[in-house]
Image 1 (cartoon, rainbow, N blue to C red):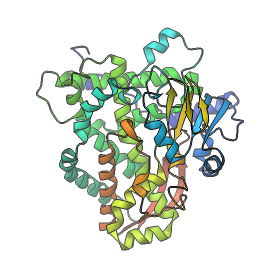
Image 2 (image 1 turned 60 degrees about the vertical axis):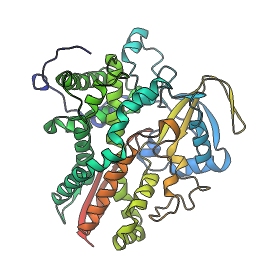
Image 3 (image 1 turned 90 degrees about the vertical axis):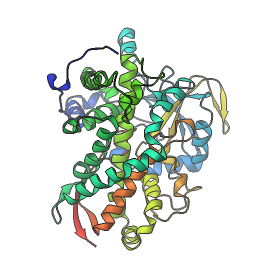
Image 4 (image 1 turned 90 degrees about the horizontal axis):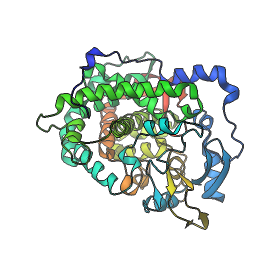
Length: 444
């Protein structure tokens, strides 16, 4: 890292267009250029998630071919892995099924075939979730202290205070967007605390997270430079925070932890940017979309909402069930490092293996009535929404805390949140969530 940089106030950081607006504008002029998905088992298509019609496609695969290969897709050939057993098996062999960025990384997409090799090298973004051991181990250990049980306990009062303040600011009897007023506000505020990020600029974290999570941008070549410029602004902002904290005693924030870590203090600019994206997306999109999923789920299953309203003791288990039901990240990708057999299927070295968490969490052999939200489900904790094995989400405990406190504070206010307007889902095969969720609050 460099040793001098201007303060954030000396730069202008764009806050628009959002990635959704940019992609929608691009799509109006380039709809015929979008690739065509022809295989019925090609679940890389984003429309099935935007339109919430993915469930029967995965159900057919789980019943007839839990592990299967699709070929000739816009994302190339890949293996679908759709059940809990198969997902956990792949995750249990991280050397055989690699997460490393230099073998393909963790998302279904690959770099454009026609990209200039020099530019590709410049724009690769290593991050510890997209590394194999031993590099993964050292970098994960660097940030793990921010999410220990002791640290979570330390954050509890802060999370409750901010959650209470946010809920108390909401209008009763008037329609508003839950995603914007609650889900984004709470998760972005939590990220700002974790990073020691200037509070007044915290919405930049959401803006950057959305640009990072849009896998469909791979098809919009005209937006590639814009996306990279957004990442550059993000890196510049964090660079000023990094430099400001160099030479200072260790603090509790993630940037300070990186600075004082042998594994991360000498990161390249690309690695720094990659890990920022990982921590921002991991801390923002996942919790944010489950916060919205809780509201949509309770509204979709009135009997479960009544259960929640009558018995707050089920909240800890209800959190796990809501995470299972929503599954805020639909997939993770692995790449085979050698030939292997996977439940009777012959995987070849270099094959792309896609773990569909969103399908495994609806695995009927593990979760009876899997398409139903059942708040007191006995084995809700068996969900794989946080992954499994060495790459299990490092911030899982913090996510669970935020969701538990949200439900507790809603119950304390006798707050029934009803979906009364527009519901817009994310058009993506990676992030699974809501763009808009128009709601109205009433007392129960």
